Image (tube, rainbow, N blue to C red; front, top):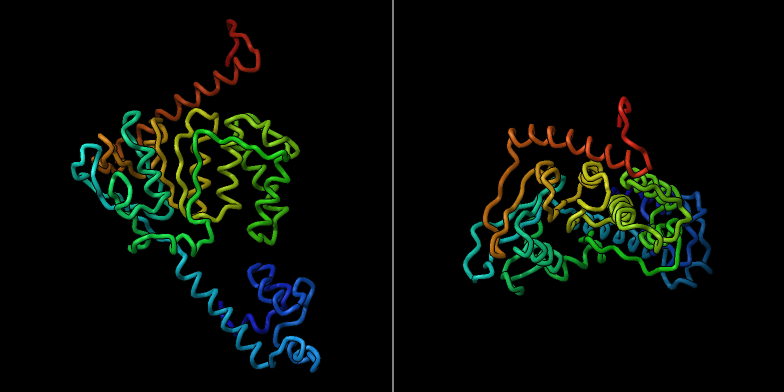
Length: 334
């Protein structure tokens, strides 16, 4: 973001591209939404009453504006997530964990292990940005630095998004208005278009399509999770996505994960589903509450994934066949 370019750009285009500038103009009672003049052009035409009312000079306001632009540039450079590390702590037996975990943007990592082994604990350590202050004594690093409340504050509460098995809505609101509320709270310039895109994507992911005027409390478990995945990918700006099992929700799993990864997010998912495990770039194995080892998906496993995917496709086709009331008869295909 070049201050020289911003200074000569129409104000209404500035706030469309970067809604955060709205706050700056609003604090000086400047209506930027419909203003086709640039900042420099607007300042040149202001009279004495304007400067007296704002208790500053043209030079002072210009300096403040340039400092604001530079501040946004600095914040952007600090908030780009490249990688996340979970440094080894101890397992349930208080023995040192055998490995640490390194996650990168655009990569899918699964957490595998028996029920109760500690998969959700690992997700919680990342969500809490553990600094040896949880039962596992793990430490979370973001971009190689210790993560803490200040790190989270840089993202305005948008550092981590979590999608769990139990997604329940309590709002008395339909899907469209729910998404619009979220989009407006993020100051998205194209909120209406984004809401349409999220609903369309959610219906692609869900096995049961729903309408924009469906009440969120009426959505099934699969529809809720499909909606949240599409919302996290398009409206939510969190660069880190934690998922606690999506396999039993009737969601198109491959499409859902591709959607998140294509948005340059770090995706970590606890799962028992072999399709998801083999679809991931790597998996961390949990044993007795500790990270036992990290396995990178090899070429043999990737080839086996294609066989499993074909079987899964046949099974899904069969489910759909019987679900709509069909009857298997001689000479009739599924």
